[in-house]
Length: 60
Image (cartoon, rainbow, N blue to C red):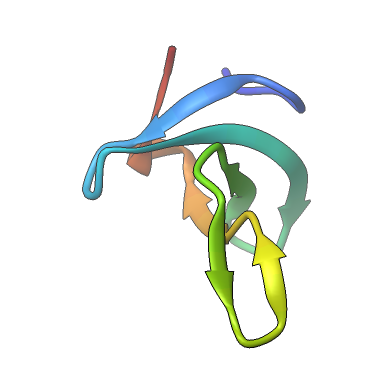
């Protein structure tokens, strides 16, 4: 079971990050993962967010 602030890796992409939000719909639970890798774009510096199901994540 995954919880807020767990360190995880997204299996498909190999992106590592931290769970910063958990939300549930009628059928599924989704985890918002904030990447540990900073990127830059025209809006400035940011840490990308990814929305994943539990089976897509691996706890580190």
